[in-house]
Image (cartoon, rainbow, N blue to C red):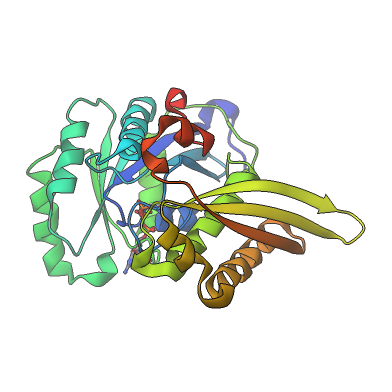
Length: 304
Ligand SMILES: Nc1nc2c(ncn2[C@@H]2O[C@H](COP(=O)(O)OP(=O)(O)OP(=O)(O)O)[C@@H](O)[C@H]2O)c(=O)[nH]1
């Protein structure tokens, strides 16, 4: 039953943590739809992705911030700036860490960033399915010794263990507020962005360590062909170096074909239509260090 409007609670939650701690996995679990890219390689989430969870009494709006790390090049600067600014705007910060790894330099870097924030910070110990409960206590202590967390919640984003309790606790911290989004709204991003992320995800999965994060995907067109009842999608995969172009294409184009087949499947699910996907590969040297090109690929400094 819908509660009275003056009882409704809503707010914004930022998920931060070192790359690979499971932020996207968590988001996908609570939102219940594949909207944030998942990968076993670090730093695959580069744009802010919002997931919206609406219940009868509340609406939680999640911001999946890029993995915070010490900036190594221009792209890193964009990511850190974005993460830092979101911390000020939200109602709760979820600081997610790995249950099976000790506190490290990357975590301390984030904790330093949290020093000056007044927003309540939850310590989320993820991947508890990988550790013995006895080991958990030591991990918790190592974090609570260095920061005064508003809540400490161990979860497994993968199998859902304790996620429900985390959601209930989050709701407690939300202020009274409006329903910002309609009930069926799960993401703010246009289909274009999600499609490019699907393709990028396949490139990263299928090329393993050979292609680092130096890959961008630009969607050239999405056109519905009413007669053929098909959607034509054309996209360009942009890499740093000639050698990477060869890797992405593969022997006689085999890898590019596999990337295309897998991405097409996801895009068809998203759009609910048959899709014809055309992929190109282009070399654009050193694109990560050129602000002009970063903007062209969708990284906008002034948005943050
Ligand atoms: N065993 C286990 N694995 C998990 C859990 N949550 C996430 N993973 C795995 O950890 C890896 C990284 O998960 P992601 O969700 O992509 O991590 P992320 O924090 O979004 O990574 P970035 O986008 O790089 O910041 C994937 O292989 C997940 O399957 C968990 O609760 N248990």
